[in-house]
Length: 196
Ligand code: VGL
Ligand code: ZN
Image 1 (tube, rainbow, N blue to C red):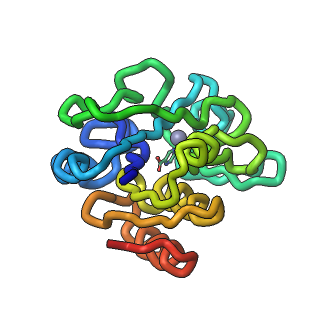
Image 2: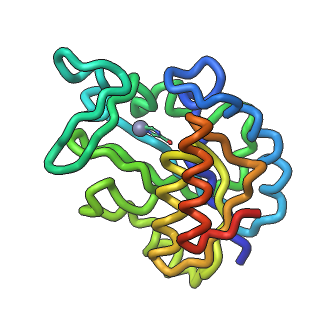
């Protein structure tokens, strides 16, 4: 079964969103095209409570972009984004979601962030994505979405470590920062992700 996972393609990550990824909206149409080639389409959603630890606004005397340490993990502080059940966490209207079979929510626990669609950043809790794919006997997964240097990267790398043959469609991804996106592509490649 040809399987596609769309990572965090949500209003807050595209033009006008609170954590806008440069050119994020430009991948919507290419995704609407490639989606037709897949038998199974899943999507992840960044899905934060208002009081989430990753929001700079929830820390005194901290700014967006600061890095703090929480229980031994580095945490980048972001603008408030993808708050549960808000416009910012919705899929963009122009994304064709009619074939999306299941949505995997992540980052919904107040005290820990989750860049990967498989596990939180401490690898403590699974989102259930691996089990879902294994039950369906899926062996190969293609990925598209946002952001190259954060959630897309961590999702693809965990996909490899979970044993799935993993490909990323590079014309259907965008990153927050140019340099870190280049590094992310190299890191994915070195871990066995196929970039196509
Ligand atoms: C993301 C930063 C914070 C992403 C999510 O989807 O790449 N980045 N939360
Ligand atoms: Zn987030």
